[in-house]
Each structure stands twice: as C-alpha cells, then as structure tokens.
Image (tube, rainbow, N blue to C red):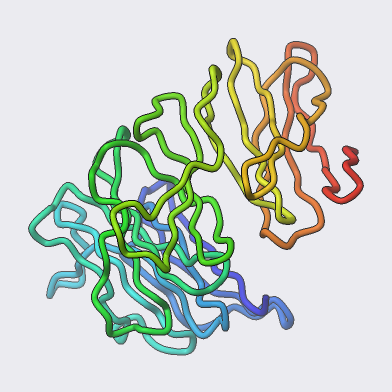
Length: 270
C-alpha cells in the first residue's frame, strides 16, 4: 500500500479527525477529515480514495452527533467539502451505517447497526458506483460480521438461527432467497470471531471462559486446532486472505501477555 489513513483524538474526545500519510515519503497529506467518531476507513483497491462515516455539519461549522451518521467517499488529494455522500438513512436516526470493501475488491458493503444483538448489511458492486444499494441481509435476526470473499461468495459470522455463532456464505451471483449456505455449523462453544488469512479461516471459540482456535479451509473443513501456549485468552489473527502469516496475543493465569506469530504454510508458532 502507498497510503495509511489514521484517526486522531484530541484531549480524550470521542471526536476524531482522519489524516493520510504517504508511506514511502513519510509525509502527511494536506487533507483532514472532520466530523468522525467511531468510523473505520474502507479503501478502494487502487487507493484513489476511501469510504468513511461522519456526522452532518451545520452552517456554523459544527458537527452534530444528535443527527444520523452517513457514509461518504473521500478522494485522495481533494478537500473534505468535495466528499460524496454515498449512503444515508435520514428516516432512521438510531441506525448507524459503516462501510467495508470486500477482500476481492468487488463490493462495497454497508454494515448498519442499531444496538448489539442484530445488524443489517447492504451491498453494491464497486464497478457500479451509481447503482442503488441492495439489501443483502435485512431481517435483523442476528449479528452479521463480514469475514472474507471467495469465488464470488461472501462469508459472514452470524448468530442468526445460531445463538452461539456459525459461518455462512452468500452467493452474490444468485439473487434468490436461498442463495446462502452453511460453511461452519454452530458448535457447543461460542464462536466469537472469524478471520481469513492465507486462504484459511481462523475461528475463535470460548470454552468455559478460555479460548480455543480452530483452523478451517474456506469450504468449512476443520484442518486442525491451533495449539496455544496454555489455558488463556487470545485475540488477533488479523491479516489479508493472501498473507503468509498472522499475529495473536495470548494471556493466561501465569502469562501477562505476549504477541505470537503464526506462519500458516509452516504451521509454526513463534
């Protein structure tokens, strides 16, 4: 990547501003994105710009978090006043939309949350930036967390019809009502998160309040259980689907916390 976008909070405020740095030169670009609180940044694959969520600005220049947050697109090198409004829900002020670009660079997803128990997901092809958004998951019947994309299928961790969590795949080439399939079924243990690294799925489970990590292929076959340093809690396993390795933090009763590297192809933890 050529750029990195980062958020800065001043004096402990929830309000952030987003800055962009050129990684090669180390220089900070002139743009400064205001009116942001809890937004992520979703880059276009070509790095021409990114999607983010912010609150509306009044004539006096103040941003108002009592009004709904909306998704905007910022083009690198332009001013914030030129940012394009992408997705808004003015009639649902308690619904908060946040953007995500799928790993294959084909779709823009809008994750709409209203509380913790359930969310909705809307989608649009990145190649069709004038097309309307499609309601991909709009039953509000559970949590839906995007995991990765594979063969034009989008994988989600969900609690819908599975309160302890499972992984489903949605076929984006099929617009029918039955365009999804189950990849990892619900377990007796709670599935708290799933990430995709090097074509494999790292599924974090809680068993009797301690972590277990199962490694699956993208068809849902269990390849192995990751050997952890002991009984404790892990977090991490971030990375791209093509990354060679990933990192996780482990802490336990006698371990205050260490960061480990896992090399996927070698199945080696250091």
